[in-house]
Length: 426
Image (cartoon, rainbow, N blue to C red; front, side):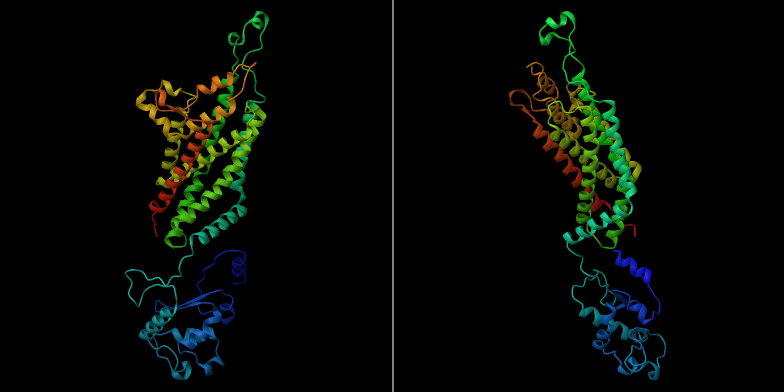
């Protein structure tokens, strides 16, 4: 019991069943619960037992001189045999009817009780009112923090993966070319800038941004098993009415957002600094897009984990959507060349908006000998809503807002899937 008590002092919740304990053992509990014939007759601290016995007219001063309070309680509530008044005294329960009367009197004395709808007055279960949403959220948030600190391997593996991704991509594309034209030789130097041979720099930088964004899209799938476990854990917690869906979802969102921010900054920061991105010098905007994109991808994976009946189906849903994102990112295949029957799917992919925003941050305002070469590149990736003169061109800020709209959509769908789709198997 000393070891169990030490666990509770470390923050663990322990429920323990015990048979005929000594008084010293009962005093070690924070709260004790006594059942008699299946009825709850007491639920509270050990120090309140004497007061309860007195209020229930079961306190026997003479027996208290030779018997501990715990033994007196057990002797009083145990029925089903002949009780000698010489041994048990006159203030004790004799049969199940006495137990039922005691249970009803005790339940009536407790405030904030919850009665199951189809329970009879003699068999309903008393439950303490569940704390508010903020209290539940704070408890869950601390619980997740303790879990991460006690089992840092999972978190360290995810951080290590993004560190390697950033280092690998930064090494492969180390110090990329910054000129739009090839170094002129011979008579090429006499030609005006638009007629000189262009370098592959714009295409290379677009490719790096696409690979970096794609990596940030795929890596959250590594945490799919943990998202599945979280859903199953919530199902058990919800069956016991410990937590609601909203505080549980909020705690998960905040924890995952912190992890994604760290991973996104680590991978994207290393890769962009080593490769020399962005060309415009607006590094913070590039980081904001990549980190937000990574958070959006994580919300997508969480949504799939909560919508799917098992892990395999969740992987299929996530992988299928990522493939659609790749096709309509306007990099592998130009959206303008896609048949109108399928072109509408680009509006359903967040990578489409991420790439448009990233490329605008990368090239906007950059020039080559006063020639606005960067704007030419940006124009090929701009997103237009509508046709003709009334068409609206999305700016960098508009793309960023669209990206966060996808994040909130995935998060809300994940919340409703958690609330209404997680059925208890208990």
